[in-house]
Length: 116
Image 1 (cartoon, rainbow, N blue to C red):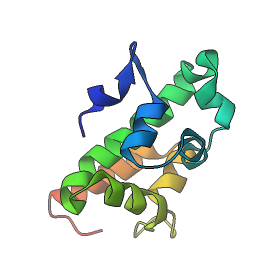
Image 2 (image 1 turned 90 degrees about the horizontal axis):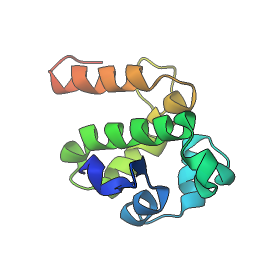
Image 3 (image 1 turned 45 degrees about the horizontal axis):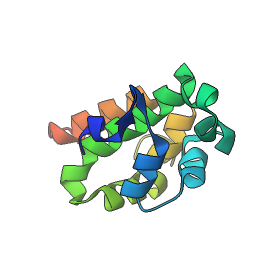
């Protein structure tokens, strides 16, 4: 995944993300813990919080895609696989809780050979 492929006019474009992940913008919004308006209204889409959540999800998917072989499988992992040591929370839940940096640190540690 090249993050620039998901941008349009300097902002992450949920429509492009949805097409790549074979889902809808509404589902992407739910995955990010945002209302569908956050991804439909230009002013809300360009808000720092909305763009930050999109960027965090894309960065996490970008880090794990090589492990899983496709963006779709990486997205399924993101949404449904509990991470050891995080109380059974999934990456999606952790990002919603503002803990994306912890998810990325976990992924980096696993990639470096540290067991979780």
